[in-house]
Amino acid sequence: MPPRWHGPARAEGEVKRSLRLLRVSAVLLAGCGVTLSESDWRGPAGSNWAKDSYECERDARLSVGSGGRETFREVRSLTEKCMVARGYSKVPAQP
Image (tube, rainbow, N blue to C red; front, side):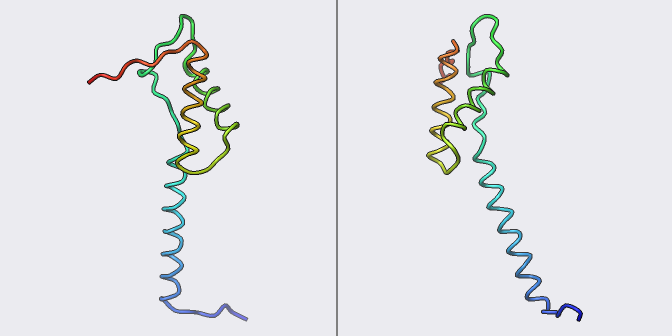
């Protein structure tokens, strides 16, 4: 038995639903990254920025889990504390 044709209204509804799901996914994924900027930090002699920032962010994510805006703040805070513990210091913001 061939599938029933439900008309353009149903197809349009499915497209809108797919686009809505895509938008929600994009918003959720955009909020996932903490990404510290190397130019905002001074590291100790012989430091490896890429390795240290990656490991600090990974460890922070593992300890916090996933969630909304508060989770992002917590991950960023833990990541920054980890970087300080490794000998990095934040460069003061320029006015």
